[in-house]
Image (cartoon, rainbow, N blue to C red):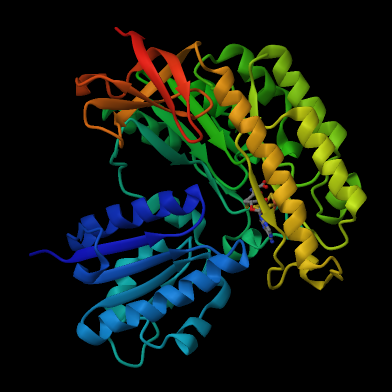
Length: 443
Ligand code: SAH
Ligand code: F3S
């Protein structure tokens, strides 16, 4: 039997992508087989997240549980990767000495070497440096896992928002070579992938020289839309400051680009935005949305929000609520501010009681949920162009598809040959997390 690998992924899509790539690399280099049962594994990797406090605590409690597996099987290799690894470094060994290797988001291509190193007594198997170009160069050919796929186009972030740990854990922004990106999309399309999502911490600050000029995200979207088989293009996450006019204009020219934009605003108060060092105002944010809506009136916007940033007054919070009601955001994420080690905001005075913050979060989430529900209900009786993504989780006699704004739609159909195709579905029923529909046309 081959070596069995179990990877647990915490956090964002970047981490999901990184886990997939780590598995692909270890398949090539060590012939591993991926298992979804940690009890059965020879190598266990935790691909961690440190964006908020809770994520870190989860890692340490998971490690506590893994210790028992290691007691049973001393040959088991335990690795900690991702952002907690960069942030904590060798401290992880102090709290969990049975961890064999420590690697960061930009050194996942070195995991096999680190496993070998961990065999040698006296040598520390740790590498949490940021060799981002080298990482991009070492990524193996992509292997599709279905009709949708992520494609990383940049790494790290140089925006240094005052609350955020990403620039310290993933390093400064580096854009990926465009040839590598086009190649990856083409390989995926050949394998039947019809929807790609360009991912990175800040995809719209992408900038790389190519054939005598600079390519931006707008160019990547335009060029990849010409690759045969690519029916849908998404991108995440973008920053309002980099929503340049060329990017707004691609909504006019590239029909494959979905009418769904995830654009984190964080707060509706200009004073708080300034202290967060976001470098835009709510007026600029609204202007971007209106400009795209002029081109795509049906655009849905989702966002990220932080409540209880140090010094956020009731008035500041009300301004966030006003913005939410004005834009009527679709499915969004909202979090209570959590002080991250080494970030400028962690030194600010924070006097708002936790109870108050929880109340604000509850109010915000109730309003966001009501918009989410409203949008779903408004889809009832309409016909939606959906991408068939696989067999329904609910019943094997059903397939699952996704609308442009990423709602899951289940519909009766047995034939798996529809997977990966765009079809028209009449939406009959809206539930809180999915829709039920009837297939009306396909070819
Ligand atoms: N690149 C993205 C954000 C990446 S982090 C951007 O441009 O905003 C994902 C989300 O986590 C952020 O949008 C923010 O809402 C939240 N987040 C980041 N740091 C946080 C912190 N210290 N406390 C609470 N939420 C945080
Ligand atoms: Fe973080 Fe701001 Fe970059 S939220 S990922 S520093 S854009």
